[in-house]
Structure formats: structure tokens, C-alpha cells
Length: 138
Image (cartoon, rainbow, N blue to C red; front, side, top):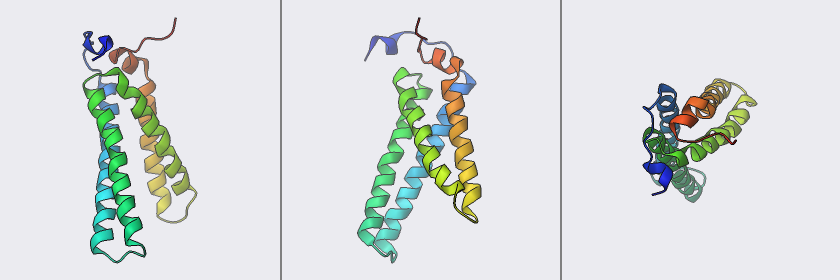
């Protein structure tokens, strides 16, 4: 346990709680999507069962990162901001891909992009950094 994790923190601001909720929702979506892919790979009739199963396991493993970051944000751990920001940045990649698609995928891309940008704004907010014990460089 590092010394910055033992120092008392100010009360958790609502922005930090909202950022944790965004991360938790993204992590949960990844885990649910992974479980769905895994089940369909095992029980369904995919073109490549092994690819569907591995894709499902990969999504579930990737879902652990934002879930751990969300827990860290709720507990006001300074280390949690890095994985949370990376998760938001990575979420912009599939959002961009969905926005360039056609049909019903465009609204999904808009929602994903809005969630990722909202998460980024919440995470880089000075109030959030202060609550996590992250000080600006002098």
C-alpha cells in the first residue's frame, strides 16, 4: 500500500461517483457481451465456434479492467484514474467505427461516443483529481 493511499481524502465528489458509474457500466457491458459470445459459441451455430468462444473470453477479461477502475474510483484510489482514462480512450475506437457504419449501428456509435467523452470529462476534472489525491505539477 503506497503512502498516497493512506492519506485521508476529501469527501467523494459526485463527479467521481459518476465517473465510477460510467466505468462500471462499460465493464458490465463488456462482461455481458463476452458471456453472450461465449454462450453462443458453445450452444449456437457460429461460423467459427473457437473464435466466438475466444472472443467471449477476451471481452470478459477486458471487462475486468473498467470494473476494477470503477471500484478504485469509488474507494478514491489514485491508481484508478489511469485505467479509467485508458478505457474511455479505447472506447472511442469502436464508437468511431460504429459512427462510420450504416443503419442502426450509427445510434449505438453515438451513445458509445457520448459515454466515453462524458467519462473523460469527468475523469480529467480538477475536482476528481483532487479527490483522488493527484496534485498538479508545480
